[in-house]
Length: 260
Image 1: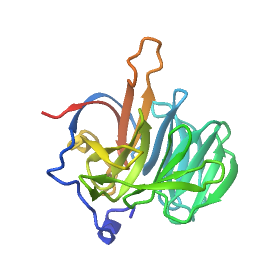
Image 2: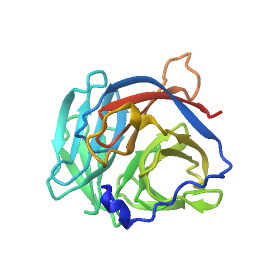
Image 3: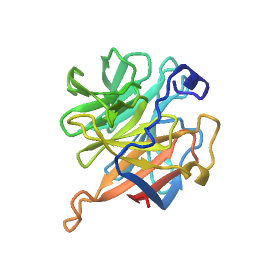
Image 4: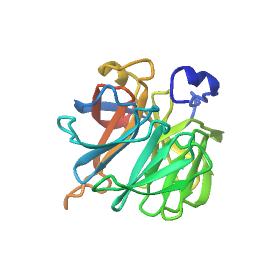
């Protein structure tokens, strides 16, 4: 699932070409250094710092990073038997999924000390938080909504576009009431209504990989982070959007607009 060769084991369902939803283009606003050896699985900003979860057995980590220079300020390596996946921050805790181990780790935000763990029966791909519930992707077309304290699944929605299920939902970010999801092995980010799973628009990041260097054939788009604009005079819903990929040498700040 998480390498180019294992993609052959999964039926990738491409987005329908004639889907009647808005398609957004992008403009690069700025670029920042990103560790080309990082197999990015989860990405999030919190209190001015970038937090990143990475994958691969023996290389999976959780890190706190300075945006401007890419310097790692704090890091924790997972045991080699674990393949790290998506992360999210809830209060003073960080949640980190594992791919096929059915384990979700919960760390102290300040120290990265392991506080507890939860069993979860499905694979773990992406994770985000809507302010009340965790939202988890598992490689299927479903999003699971989960109670953070017990990790109990409260409900599940199927993600569709024009009624067609879209599988391989990967890294997630909750932005202005929507769930944004990378579609693994594609150039698309889909914007999902969490109430019903409908994809209401698509961000097409074709060509972005050509603006960076990659550390191998696994270097596909994956990683979404959002910084809301909290200034008193800010436009409601405004903020800064960042994207990257597995094994990419750059993290990009982008703006989006309806494609012409």
